[in-house]
Length: 398
Image (cartoon, rainbow, N blue to C red):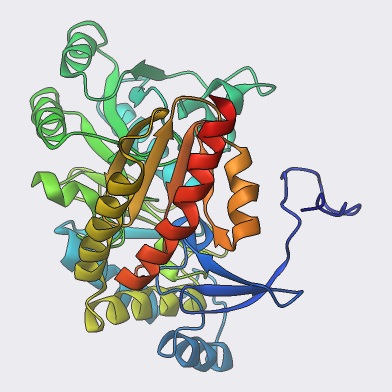
């Protein structure tokens, strides 16, 4: 495969692959040369319903013909409709709409700081985690636990206390020694960090500690939420509720959208003038969110994510689990990581050559995030394409 053609008028912020995708249908996409691929990435957990879904497309066409944008000077009925749907599915109470996961996380951090200020804490601190990823704004990259993301952007924003994931003793030490902490901010399953799940018992212990300390529990469900694990939100497997929950990615099935869903402790922290957005909550994005949730329920896509995800996980473990060089195969539902014992970025381009879209994250983890419409036959096809690539790669590196 030849190198990607230069794009002289576009900032060089991406290491692009030499393929331009033109259209898709279901879990398939085609490039401008007519070559077909199996999409096991879904735009990094964005295309919940796959491509050109026959129920979503006419709904969006209908909305475009009515109204695309309306600023927040005015009531937007579709905001109230989508907010009610999210409240019902989460058990929380109020929603703020924005445009992306970064924006949702930024809003969560503002809530944590103002929550502290309202309690008389002038220099509020937020507990964050090693290997976390929350975005690339100055504040969210400061919360992120990846030195590569930090590089070149010092000074970082202060006010973050970093601890390892799944270590409740470290969290209890923070409670003993850091009186300015106002919130704990974590991904239920770390996505960019390598598909690292927070254990259910850990989430339960953190929820209890937040209650004891008066902290907000803020769960970043940007990548793992919206049915990807087989429940609406990944934390629901642990039987807990957060106080603040940022969402984005899969909520709009490809239309940019973000949301911060809050419970009673956080729902009224931000008041008029504290936060806002021009594009957030626009009618097109809201219609995309409403239709995504409606279609997911009509088509049983959460149950499908759980069933097909378990099938895919079993097939991967059967084909790759005993190979020297494969450290772990983990995840939940249709969010799966295959961790190797060495950097494996080359697998990205080799999979593309074989007709498979995926990603490599945290240098050593092959990440699969198929659309929630994925079938067991497509899962088998994914394994049939991927397993030989990983075997060949490990054999070359032995």
